[in-house]
Length: 141
Ligand SMILES: [Zn+2]
Image (cartoon, rainbow, N blue to C red; front, side, top):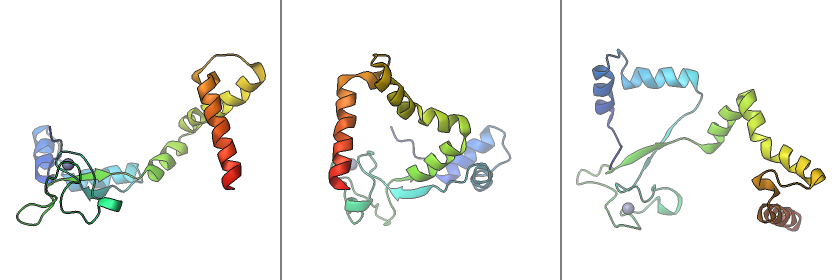
């Protein structure tokens, strides 16, 4: 199932639901609320890959061999992406969300002192993983 919609299709949906917005006005309205700029990338029509980085110059999908471009040399499929950095900045701008994101580090500190199993972070594998990450950090830096 393909969920990609053209601008015209979105305008039709907005009209059908009785909105006086167009996609242009809707984008402007959202941009005023959320300071995040979507990036449009060509993607495989079967959603296998986005044609970025190592796939940037490919003309066919490396997984299913579907063409990237149609006969008019337009991308067969495109998808908007939002940068992870921008999304995290928005999340951290909210005080409650920022505190939620601190949960693991706060919990880890407490569980080290009490030596109890109250969360997944008390598990052997998670603790071993974090020990490994700390060792790796000291080796690299
Ligand atoms: Zn594909």
